[in-house]
Length: 369
Image (tube, rainbow, N blue to C red; front, side, top):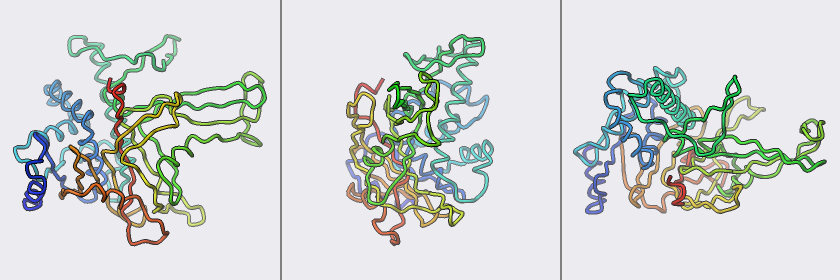
């Protein structure tokens, strides 16, 4: 790897970003699903900075009790404080902790990178919320948790309102969807909000992220057995329903549903469809109808023809350069190479490297709160 590392340094030359580190991650037998997501998160700069700040402020806690958050913070801190600019790190403690925490990731079977990302973000939130609650009962230990400006209130059993805690994980990844249902008889609109850390999109052959998002927000008519119970009419009525993005997240994570259950086969099949994902994305299916602009900074790629085997790699944009991370190996790639991961226009193709999870960062300054 030394040679590959120095090759990367040579390729970047004087353009090697000040203070940046590009380290491959060792694979512990099918842990590429984990490595590819960790690289995408490491190069999600606001998330990395807040995690390292958390680590700096909680070093004493880290000694007291190990959890996935302390293991992740420790790993990111190890990478960022390396003397060398490039090399390989073994994320051993993190992987051991992950397997201890969730039996799903214990086997050497091929795992799903999206399931892992979902589990990790929710686990980090749980840990931060527990710490904030512990800090509340012991006010000496920590600064007060931040409250959500005017977000959804959760009602407790005794009827009092409890403000949900907004952690720095929420601030980066959480968006709000609103599910609008309009009764076709009385025209009353019922809206229900729900939060999300990522959007899972159905895909079609020769499509684009923009068309997948349009389909996600398209109007669906509820009739026949699917009628909607309208509170105003007090009866089942035909209705129209659609999903819109009420609050776009700062980091928009899009998961392409490439693994589809085929009834006739009784198993999952990988869809190798060509889905174009732009380097700059305009999000238009928002409630306010203002276009939110996003820039692509990471792609987790599934390599392989089927859902139960294969490999994961990641493409990452750092300081205007694109890098390709494949476990221990890191190399520079040209921006134009990103389009080779859109998918295959034909059903059977020798190219099995397909974009699976996309990470976009908002370009809007208003989101940087």
